[in-house]
Image (cartoon, rainbow, N blue to C red):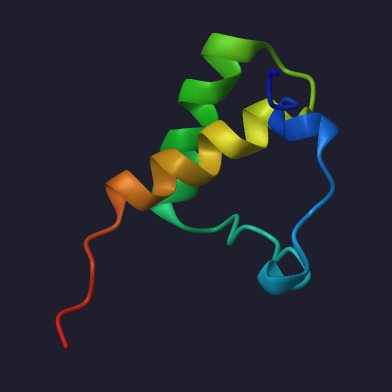
Length: 64
């Protein structure tokens, strides 16, 4: 049996509420521009997932 697509599943409780992107950051602006070129100017869950993944790749992790 196939798993449901991400956008058809409910949000896991352990993730808590979603947080807004920091729209002033350089990482967001570059990721958003790339997503706009790829997916068009509309808003969608898949596009937001793409942006969040791109921000994670762009931002360096803090060392402990």
